[in-house]
Every structure is written in structure tokens, then in C-alpha cells.
Image 1 (cartoon, helix red, strand yellow):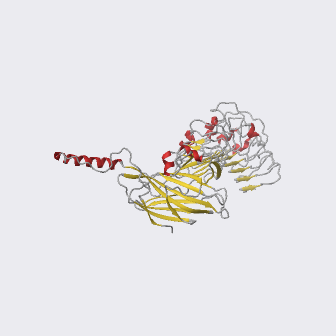
Image 2 (cartoon, one colour):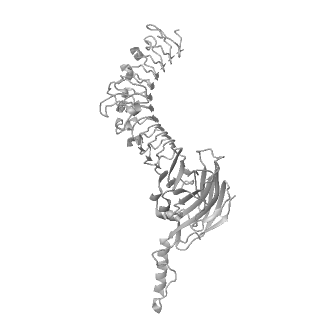
Image 3 (cartoon, rainbow, N blue to C red):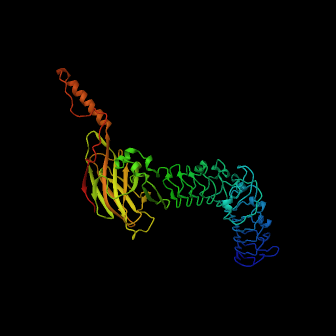
Length: 535
């Protein structure tokens, strides 16, 4: 036994591991997981070199023997689901090598070491489900390990009965700055539980706050510059998120059913999960959904929808691919901001409106495509004197063959290529409308705020690729123009010079061009020629 290095007694029916002390000078790994009749941790006085102590699921262990303080080389202490555990040894904070503590599910824990900040080597702390009944203020309340608030009755109704726990003097600020992973699921954390400054946790790469009660996170969350993973699943009171850490790689806000807005742009490298976030209507610099009566009236006119009153009772069912939710409501506007595919391109704004209907409005140049699932068009844009292009409008008439519709997923890939300027935009719209039955048709109206992206003489290629049972009937296109102030100023100067040079003849010569009017009418769709049809 003196040469024993690893001892695995998991799932055994032992009541004690050994009586008194056991001389095991080489023992490094001791696994007592799910020994449900075990009541206390053995005496380690003669086995001082244990590095990993696993007591997961030992539901009758109520204390850890003080001799654990002999394990100065202990690296891992796993007490997960030790539901009878009352206290931890006070000398735990003197461990100089302990890297990982798992207290998840230790729901009856009453005493914790007074200052975890002394544990300079601690990298991983898991304290899921630890709740402390405390009346102290927010700077002295236990957070995660340590929670400020009492269980709310509606939350308590679906949790197992818990004994009223006494207060402790721990706070989030007592956690060591060495932490790399911190898990505080279902710890009853409210907004008041967080200190205003989280920068002392600057080593964190993973933070899991799932299942808590806060409405928002402190702005100082953005000071966690090396944080890569932020998990907020089932935070059902969470309403908004502000600035996020710049190096965040993954944000998981699944089932945050009250989340409405992400107030700052999400870092470009961050992948997001917003599944079942029913109320989410805005992610800054990504998408925004709002009622149609809040959109600029000029955009509605460009899309052939000048009369809002006639559409007041119209409803449509939208599927949001970011949240995987459906919403049936009055007409909404989806505003997507899309990154260009070239490195020097700015973002472009696209506005989408989905409305039941079959016929494309007359303001669009119609191009029937006869149900092809994939269509490609190339247009030459003719220059129009005194004007520049400010908008690019599309109308797509489609329906769904429900025998091929799989639900969810992406259904449209929308692409625009300016072959002249070598600029490209390609993306999947955040939302799309679902017809109520196989007979209903949807008009998908798109306005691209193409200012400075298109001009006369450009060759523009437009493609829409549809999947998942969607069928296109027809596509229309139109352009919006506005007066070019540079052109007007240049022409006025030319006319003045012309008049001055001929003034000596006392002949008033007027340029017949009607450039002096304060209103310049849109030339309509006459600047577009179809060069090639679908392939």
C-alpha cells in the first residue's frame, strides 16, 4: 500500500475510507465519487501528497476533516453535489497550489473561508446553486458563493426546499484575481450583488452566470479584456446588455426571455446564441426590428407603400433566425447592418418589410422568374445628369412549398456585387415572413441605403438563393435618385462665366437647362437596364 498512487472507490458502499490514519506516502489521486453512505472525509495526516480529491455526489458528507490542511500539494478539490456539507476548513485559503474548487450543488453550505483572495493559485471556481441568506449591503454580501437576495417565491416554487442559511461576510470582491474560470449558475444574483468595478477579475477567460436574477450587467464587464466565453442562459430577468469585452469569442444568452436590446455593437469575432430570446428586437450595429410607422416615409414611398392607414390591420408571421422564434404581429421593419466582403468597405444599411401579397408594385421594373429557386441578374446603371443614386430597391414575391419546408434555419442568401467598383455584400436576413398556408404569397420589400456605393455606369449583379421549400414568383427593382449638389454648383458657375463673357454685347443669354429650381424630381427607374437574366 505504501506505493499506491491512485485509489478509486467511486460508487462503493463504504461508510469510512479508513479508520484513524493510513500511511500512503505516494497517494496522489483519491476518487470517492458517489459513495453515498460516506459521512466524513478521511484523515490525511499520513497521506500528505494527494493532488486530486474527488467527492462528487457524496450526499451524506457533512464536513471535511481539518487534516486536509496537510495536503499542501492539493491541486483539485471536487465537492460537487455534497448536499449535506455544512462547512469548509478555515485553513483552505492557506493552500498555495490549489487550482480548482468545485462546490456546485452544495446547497446547505453555511461557512466559507473568510478571504479567498489569498488563494493566489486558484484558477477555477464552480459554485452553482450556492445561496446565502444575508442582510448585509452589496459590498459585503456573498455573491455566487455568496448571494445578496432571498429566494423569490416564484423561483422557490420550482426548487427543492432549502434550509434558511445564515449570513456570511464574503463578497464578490473576496475572490482572487488569479481566477480564469468562474461559474455561478443559479446563485440568485441580483443587480445589487455586483460591485461597480470588475477589473480585479482581469484574468477571467470564462464566466457563467446562467439562471440568475439580474436585469443587466455592470458596464465594467467590458474591462475583462481576456474574457472569451460569457454564458447567460436562462437569465429570465435580463433586459439589456451594454458594452461587452472586446476579445469575447462566444456569448450565450439562450432562453433570456426578457432580453430586448444589446446596447453596444458586439465585437466582430464574437459568435452569439440568442435562442428563444422572444423579446429581442435590437442588437446595435447588427439588426433592429420596429413597427412600420416608425420608418422614414421616403423609404415607404420608394417601396410603393405610401398609405400606412390602409395597412393598419395587416398582420404577418415573422421567423427570427437569431432567436429561433416566431412572432405574429402588425407590419414590422427589419433594419440590418451588413459588413462588406472587402476589407475597405463600410457597413451598409438594409431595410426589409414583409407584407402579404402577390403583385409587385408598379414603381418596380418587373422581372418574372417563374419559381426558380436561384436567380442572378446583372444591371447596367445609366448616369442621369444632375442626380446621384441614393437608394436601391428590390421586391421579391415568394411563397413556401410546405412539403419541403423544414422549419427554422436559413432560407435566403441575399447578395449584391458592384462589378465596377469590386464591392460585395452577401448575407442572410435576420428575419423572414412565413405564409400562413401554401396559397398565401409574401412580398419581401428591400431598401438599400446605397449612398456613395453606386453611381451611373456601374454594373451591378444581384442574386437571391432560396432554400427550405421557398419559391420565388417574381422580382422587381428600382433606383432612388437625389439632386447632386456638386453638379448644380458646377453648372451655376459655368453659366455665370458664360453670362459674364458675353455681357459686353448686352445680350442676355440664358442657359435653357432647368437647374435653378429648388426641387429636382426623381428620374424614376429610367437609369436601369437589364443586361442578363437568370441562370
